Length: 460
Image (tube, rainbow, N blue to C red):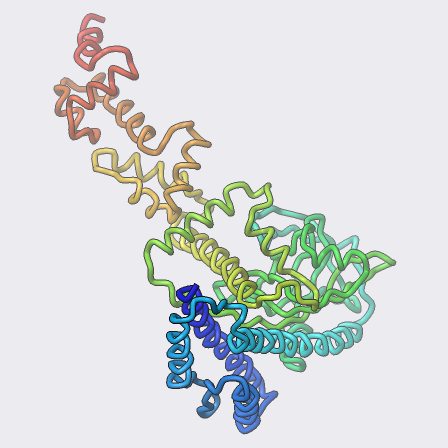
């Protein structure tokens, strides 16, 4: 039990530093947006320090940020060491530690509530600006054919949809309204149009991983947000937006009594930027593998998709421990970022419209004489080894190595038919370093040795 107590306080200290980062980020964001002066920011930080000092004095204000008082924290740890001699003490009996954790949790919830309040107020202004654009209609004469992207699974498909008009003007790719909402409310804004798959962003200033407007991405129908909107209700709360978590507010757009669109405003939640601090190669590989599991079956409901749905919730708190929620939310962001980064790499390095499998097979054909590894092939196509195996099994019912050997034997057979080179030379030319291994595979595939095959060809 004493070791558990010590671990508890150490985890509390780590969590405490995380809360400082979250609160400091909130203050800095408000200063950057012009909603708070630097003097007011310092005052807020000082007030927070005074509030917590009544519990445990471990905060010190410096300019516009907070730091941990290491001496005070060490004092707590020293007091904890003394508990080693009193094993009958249990963690839940230490009121000081419990109160500290509860206080930190409350501050996270308060920060999230302040963010949501700002978004809720911005929604009213956004709807007002939207209504001033004119009568909203769907044109039956003017239609567009576009490729749309599911913001959760990254699946793509082509659709045809009528233009959404405001006062006779198309709202597609018209960013005047959303940018004005951003300027006046300091919140990101989007106009959605309903499509069979969900709700499509036709005008937005929410950005992708490449820092481009997330135009033509859509919220799928199984999202809790869509479920609320289709009932004609306003959604306010946390939601996954393109590639991150936001405090959000969605207002339905109705045309002839039917929900045909959404006005959206939101502000990004303050999650720790773990992706900037991950340097462990094994951990990165683990995340890569999780991405493969996540996207292996786009028709199924993966654990990550379920997490996204679970934490897409209204303003009511659903998790008592906010640190758990922050960690799981950050996990979903990391997996999405890894997937998007991989897609970007493939798009930049591969020929247009080329698929990873095509890239790999072309590489194999031009490098049969070389020693190729699974790692090399995965790097060529910018995919993981798990994806590489899956692609080959689905397309050829072979592993990548079996496919390479198949192609080498096919080329060897052609050389035997067209040249008089001996078996050792042919085997080396097609990439077999071992002649005996070449003969073994040849016999397994063709039912005879290379020498027997050559004799048979000579007697024809």
